[in-house]
Length: 375
Image (cartoon, rainbow, N blue to C red; front, top):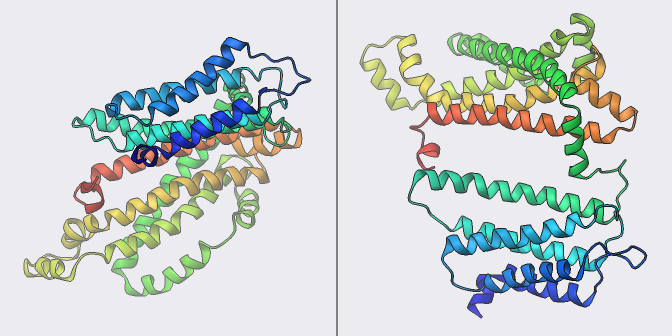
């Protein structure tokens, strides 16, 4: 009984496999089955065998390896058998997919309980666990869209999006250059830098702090779709108008967070600096700015996503015939949904990379902070 509670995912996966076995075939009767008797037996052997082994007390690395190989190999056989038979999957097919998903869940649970002694092993697990989790989002997406025959115009499968990305590298690269390397980077750097500088001035000058921050809160609530057309009218249709939108969107989060961070230094530490006869700038550089770093990096991380969103949305209101926002608005009008999803996927990857760079910089800069020391 303890083994079942320890691996309830395996127990449920075993029951789903029995239900799938009782409700065969995997495809509707009007479709010639691409699954041979040997392939079908192998799929059930992999899922049922892995489910039973999940109850055992094998060494954690070996158990995790079995739980990784078994369900993923069975899932590969299941999805590859759908080629040419989209929309023909039966309940048995989806029951097996659900069983494999539960076994992958158990694999992630086993990996999460492992505590490697080496730093390399710990880093490997930190990367492997979210990779498996993210891969199964794509696997379930692929299985449901192809197995249920969801119309392509509503939701294309990940395989179609990947094929579109592979076949449109030149177009996607030109869009990334226009949107990311020009509008986003320039607007992000200028917006964050100017917000930081104005925050220092507001901290130094009381009336500026009291007058500017309420206005900043109001301006930060302005909708992008209202600001973007105005910036296009002012700065033209090229990347400069999109950079202006990014500057507006990133300026005030940096301003507000930096001002809040500069007030985070403790009173005892500031009294100590005064006892050393430190002036404003010495106290700022040696005490208050280091204490404000978590707040500043919080603004940088927020702005890393806001900048990308602002630039893409701004391109909806006028741009040269290149750019991620232009491509999305144009291709959706042509019903090329796979290209729209390809642009979304590229934007998500670039945004995640951008965020990751800022997060790593924060960890290297604020290593003394309890949130980082605890990791």
